[in-house]
Length: 360
Image (tube, rainbow, N blue to C red):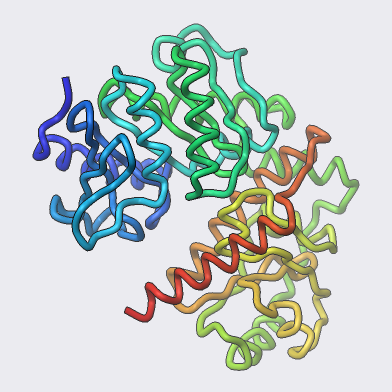
């Protein structure tokens, strides 16, 4: 049985707020849909915050060809949702999240079969990892469609370097899939850190042991903060701050640049994030930022910059998530960043799209 438009709209809006509250999605990231019939589904719009959704902003999309009517554009991942409804008639509610630990698990590109029996009613036989493709493309739609078609008894899917896809019998089932995948992912990653459930602190400690770096932190940040304040007017960004989040501080000790492990990082933060020394001049700081939204300061953390305070905080959040992926992949000896061309392409598309949205 499918949902009526009114039922679907209410459930999608409630789901969006609940996913944000539980930290499984944030801002405008991720997307949610509900089946209306054998031929149509209702989905969240592109670029809309979940707390601003109304029934009128949701979009009806055809399963067959992803066509829709009206001026409001549906989520750019509508094709992936369409594939779920096409191959799984039993699926009534689909959630795509960018949740941290399951995304980190996705970078290895492997299916997951070793999990507790208590999760099997929720997840099915296994967690399937779809092959990588650039987000919002027909290629990703086809690859995820193939993964779904070939694994009809699985409900939880990893989207490599990107996030999670949950195919639910209803909205509650989709939530249970998302939460189960995060619990399982934290348990698996915890095996590399000596924890039952992986944590930022555990990842940092294991990463520092792996690289033999000093666990102490440089807290003499007052002079640096002044230079950062002097630097901001000379950049394209109007807001910025020094983040001393433990994961950012740990990576800053490495003294090297960071390439994106996930596409969110390439889009929102940049394609190469450099590290400067703690005595770097204003000119060197500005040069390190360049066209990116962040750089590391050795032993101190990272400077996160954007056009607004909220956007700068989003840069920090994505950096943290990318470092969970970076640290886990490194500890597993399986570090393979996004390809340079893919990263540059996604960064350029994001900046042009974002600029267009901001100018409206």
